Amino acid sequence: MNLNTYTLFPSENLTVFHFVSTGSKGQIRKIIRYMPTLNPKVYNLGLADVLYIDGNEDVFTVDDQTASDNGDIDKLVGTVARSLLLFSQHYPDVFVVFGSINPVKMRLYRIIVQKYYDELSKTFILFVAKRQDDGKIVNVPFYFNANVDGFFIKLKSF
Image (cartoon, rainbow, N blue to C red; front, side):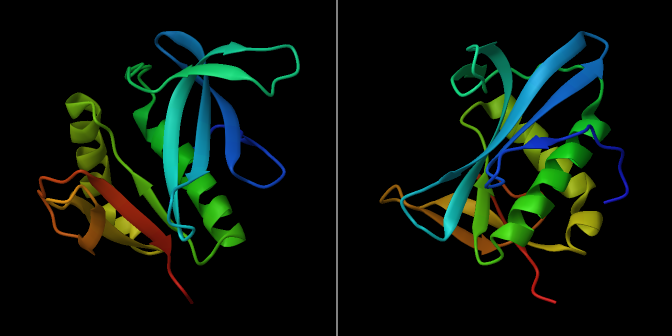
């Protein structure tokens, strides 16, 4: 994607990325985490504000429910996309799922995915995540203006 990004500080296995958002509300330390789900081929992408870090930086408290609205959404999207590319290149067979139970954040995710769909689809395959009656979440082909529970994304095979 042709967006500016923040400097990422990845973990050794590329499942955790730290960065600092700088905007109208000052500097906000952020974290992007790729966490395994019950399905070994699916990881969950989480983006959160870091509230507390212990002295060794391996234990931290985060807030993933509040949108910090630091006025840097394009740079934030570019940074998350950059982490997704690095993660996906390291784990090319894995699907990444993301969404939110917070309706405001989920609406924001839908807007972002639709806004950047053309750019994202050059590198990734996108699906929508729909919850079935039995509670399982499945991926279905992407379509615009979908009322969805999240999104699946996977690196294209070239």
